[in-house]
Amino acid sequence: MKGNEAIGEAAIRAGCLNYFAYPITPQSEVAEYLARRMPEAGGVFLQGESEVAVSYMIFGASGCGERAFTTSSSPGISLMAEGMSYIAGGECPAVFVNIMRGGPGLGGILPSQADYLQATKGAGHGDYRMLVLAPASVQEAVEMVMTAFPLAEKYRNPVMILGDGLIGQMMEPVEFPDHLKTEPSNKDDWATNGMDTRKSDRRNLVKSLYLDPELLNSHNLKLKAKYDRMKREEIRYETYHTESDYRVLIVSYGTMSRVCRTAIDELRSQRLDVAMVRPKTVFPFPEQAVLVASEKESCEQVISIEMSMGQMVEDVERSVRGKRQVHWFGKCGGEVPTPEEVIDAIKALVK
Amino acid sequence: MGKIFCKPVSLSDQATHYCPGCTHGVIHRLVAEVIDELGVRGRTVGIAPVGCAVLAYNYFTFDFQEAAHGRAPAMATGIKRVRPDLIVFTYQGDGDLASIGMSEIIHAANRGEKFTTVFVNNAVYGMTGGQMAPTTMPNQRTTTSPFGRNVEEVGMPIKVAELISALETPAFISRQSVIKPKYVVRAKKAIKRAFQYQIEKRCFSLVEVVSTCPTNWGMTPVEAVQWAEDVMHPYYQLGDKKSPDPIKDKED
Image 1 (cartoon, rainbow over the protein chains, first blue to last red):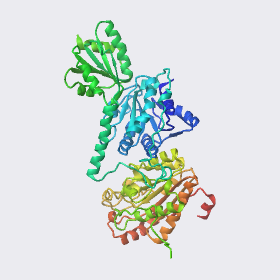
Image 2: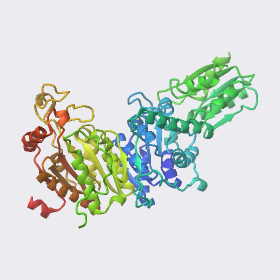
Image 3: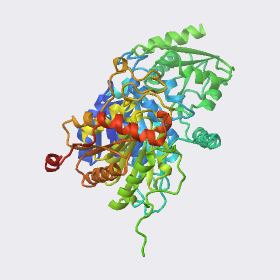
Image 4: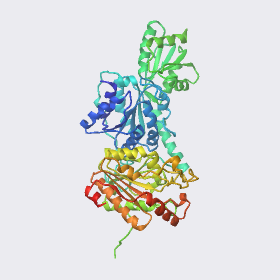
């Protein structure tokens, strides 16, 4: 199945039947797929007038207690960033999928990872974070989309799936694991689902305005506690050849990490030992895993390899805490670096 | 003798933050009375705007969501699409709806979203301190049009009710006023009709309400009422602009 279509189907299989979106390359296939599939599944499909409006349709739908999601690509995500800030401030669950293309501005329509900082450091204004999952295959994208809904409900916070254009355009066989289908959580204690619906005399309010400085501070402390909890409970990553000795440690995610795997296999056959940590959550970032892997005695250097001009490298540097030299290698025009280019970059480090 | 007049159940006991002479309180009450009379309080969700009415939820006793500037119609769309059984209304001012939120209101109306918009037109940005709005009258002085609105530079005030009535999608669009009791009675009828169309799942409905802002107009409440009647009413003509009922249209 094509990645974009699999993402749409995964949401339905996860139990989310409300989709609002605005077309943008390279992920318009999600909307095209769901325009046919949602009515069949008895769900809601609506093409909004802009990404700005779509983010508030998600806010409204989620605020009244229903699961809702949208998909977009980089320039569209910038427009949705306003809504994300309000959704995080209003403590509503929501799922955003960003199939990244090159930037800045219109940039290009080919794959990229240039929205790393936007996704992980908060795209909109104010002190908020999103839980950000970064798939490296279509199958993983499916599983991440399916787990995103219960995670968004657990934290009452937006969750982002951060994929690059290749994840959306690639065709791979997929399975939709039944065990990842979840029932929506009960939201009667906060959602504006109507007092009659929850048989209550107490009205609910979804809002982000706190004019009293003390109240706003405690609201922000409450949000911070959620992000701290994510750091304790949600960090996911994968390691490759970290059990044996290695001279270079690669940190890479998404499609780029698959190229790095091929490069590592080739380098190891040439007796240059290299290992990799692949973050599956980029917020929260697997700081401890990267630190421990970099502290290995044999490890001389660390390199962040990404399809951007060096964004994740800031998190890698932070994690390594100055104990090893941290480098960056990447490309950003839409061409994915080849295994040969990665091999050359690694060899240049240890010459 | 039984009680024959009381505060609507849909209104709370919260003391108002609105300025003396402001008509938001009257419009809040009309909305609350209508919701009580239609018996839909338990399934109503209001959407508060950005502007003076951002705190509207303090005065109502049913579910409320708070939108960003201008985005209330998009939020109402989201709610109404996933929960068509809920009664949803947006309460928006002129800066919110006619400036930053023009796109959202036009497209929601054009899709025929089955919610209701109460649009308060007082010809000025209130909450931010009296700046020029798209509805500010020609030559009207505001903090950002200190020499009066120059229509050569910024165009004529936008007539929202007429603009939205131009859309082909069936809707109920009306302009009313609350500056004198006789207007208030008519405004309530229009607001009630707007909610009834929603309950019947008929169409999008919008009631524009000509309102006063003595504070930002630099007038006493009495002067403000006079100014609204002399200057706003001739430009913002009252009455139903569009209705889904062809017979009622002919009566208009």
